[in-house]
Length: 394
Image (cartoon, rainbow, N blue to C red; front, side):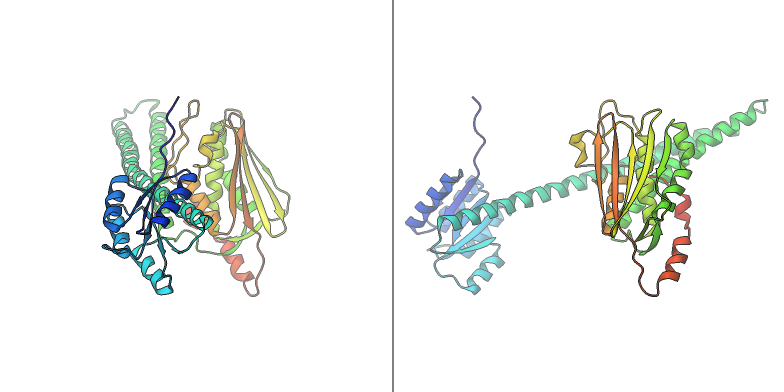
């Protein structure tokens, strides 16, 4: 029979025997390992030895004061949650305890329910804080890996381009020289395209971190954006033997947002739907206008996304890696960027997927509602095509 999981330890430091006994009984019944100490010196020794998740500290004790105990507990481990108890509750005392690092304040006498509530809240706060720090560490590690990845990914096409140019330079003037020359030029263009995608995603990430991603708020027709993007990728779809379909009524699908960012959003979704599809598969983009909202769905008949990966799909640098999946180029930023764009515009994005059957990404955005005096400005902004529009890619 396996050993039970180790119980969370809680330390109680109070010079009142009745309080220590009561706390031990209540906490033990809650399933915790409760250790009690009658003064600050013994309590600090216990904290250093036991490394508890939470400490209950009386402010008024002989010897080392409760305030000093709080500070020294956090020197031992800053993640220990400290709950202060005292028989002399005042606002000033509570504020002073919080300034010293206490999480919460419990006046004596307190009921078992009050202690249970404050202990559970404190441990939940500790759990969330630990998870948050762990996520920050993982994020930093991912970024460092990404720098290495970018360096490698840029170096690989550069070396290839150098080799291709060397071949072109020494290409003999034969009957098939023109065809070979075109072949090597095409390879150079494909490799430079890979480099452009990597650099573009890196720059977009910098904009996200600087809160400078989505700036404009103008009238945008999503139907026009989607049809333009699909036209751009007809050749890519043909090479992958994937068919493209639009299912949108004649009405315009107007939203208020940043046009260039919306192009990036649907570009990412449509390119992914083509890349992760199956030979002979299909990509369908459909739309629906509701009261105050526009919904655009991008559906593919591809490999699908395993359930274990779905909650991570929109994380920066995350890429699905599963046996049987096609190995596709990318930086793992496309969906993170897409989610940020949607969020900044007050919308939502969700995914439904079934392995070996396909996926649907559903985007909901607020419908456009004209405001006085803005129609002319919106028309010119919506008709403007930036250099970004002609250089799409994930």
